[in-house]
Image 1 (cartoon, one colour):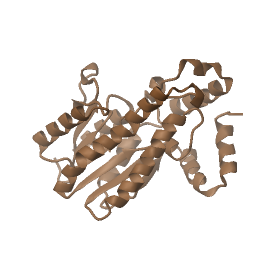
Image 2 (cartoon, one colour; image 1 turned 90 degrees about the vertical axis):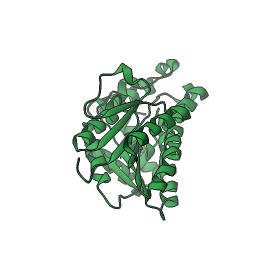
Image 3 (cartoon, one colour; image 1 turned 90 degrees about the horizontal axis):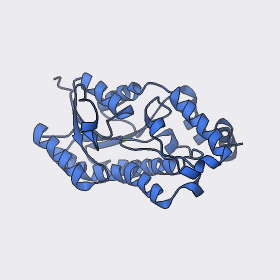
Image 4 (spheres, helix red, strand yellow; image 1 turned 120 degrees about the vertical axis):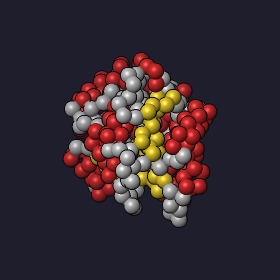
Length: 269
């Protein structure tokens, strides 16, 4: 193990970005701990350890972190990746389902941060990487609750970045565009959402963009670069050129013109 190797905890590693990133980071010589609610339901991971964790359960989180500290004596990097998506019009999305979206995507991240910050402050070192989304910059049609949860991650990370400024604990976030993962097939859709023709048109575009998206190993490579930086910046956008361009144009163009471009892409009209 090299002197630059880190002890890393990454949540949500049963598939997709989490799995690809964990495998890549382990190959780079890092000691990686992944998490899953049901680790026994998946093949034994290659090169890293997978722990049972439900990010909506404080006891589950603390048990996993305690095991890492007991085994390694430290925790260098936390990567908040666990999450899922729901799709559908706002009027077709129940309050309970919206709360479930936030409980995992947002409050799960908050729980992990609150659990590791005392450890990292005591170490006088540490890095937190929150996985946001292009959907945390751009409100995506028929993905309102998912976008809202990622907008919340953006605000949380910006605020904590300022709070940690005088400490040696650092925080950053990654904003992925569309990547080819199982996220698409696992997306939850309210039963009555299928009644809308506009929704069906948009969903087809969303799924096509994802199914033709980039390899999630690119995010693992980006994470490794960030880990090796002495002073990482607040946000990193990763994805196809047009998606990174869209993130930039959101900041430059008038709202009405930019939203027209997005609605046209997603066939809202």
